[in-house]
Length: 272
Image 1 (cartoon, rainbow, N blue to C red):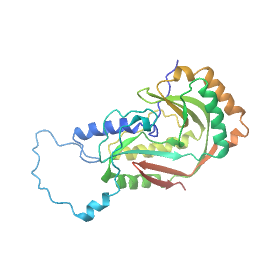
Image 2 (image 1 turned 180 degrees about the vertical axis):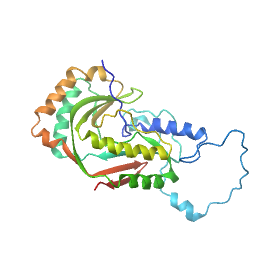
Image 3 (image 1 turned 45 degrees about the vertical axis):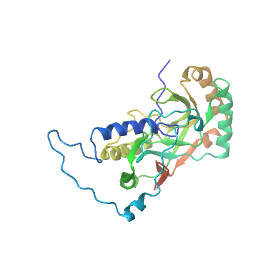
Image 4 (image 1 turned 90 degrees about the vertical axis):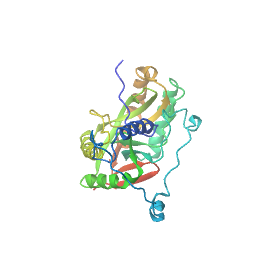
């Protein structure tokens, strides 16, 4: 059986792994984006701590508290490490507006897929990822977003079609997803990712996958369910998509904005 593509977005908890990588990078000595750690042999300069003014503290009054690691609250997913305050999981994507007819199609697909894997559940929201989930320190969010906006400013809106059913897993094979892969508009997505990667590199963050499969995830489950979902199930799901009334027009979507989610904050960048 061929290897399932990796899912490159955060809505199912991949921000946990991203935070771990960022914590390791911080431990290695990277103090700010674009700079390396202290050179070997240099002694740290003595520093004097000054009290932080109240006016500055008030700027950070909306920082999220660390979530409880209660797996019953998020479908059985378990954090692989404790949440660290000040680290914000960050993800860049194109939102996918779910119309009523799309949800009708999704209901048909999910009902059929659950005959093979009953534990599958529907995604809570829909999007196409332009980045992996990475972690930013709180004070770098606004500078990061501004640079991202600058890189997105020249892009035009475009149509794309996502109509090819595909099975995905996360890197650890602990979660499995059913998605609709993009069949037209791939070149425009690659152009966007190229600019997003430039921003990531500027901030010393992980870039996107080398050969990405742009897709909209529809449903997910805990565990590696590729054996049950690939083959007969995958063929039946594709038939449902192909035979659904007006599916060609339904699954042709206009990409109008890029969105960045960092912690509980959302930043939208309209395309021209």
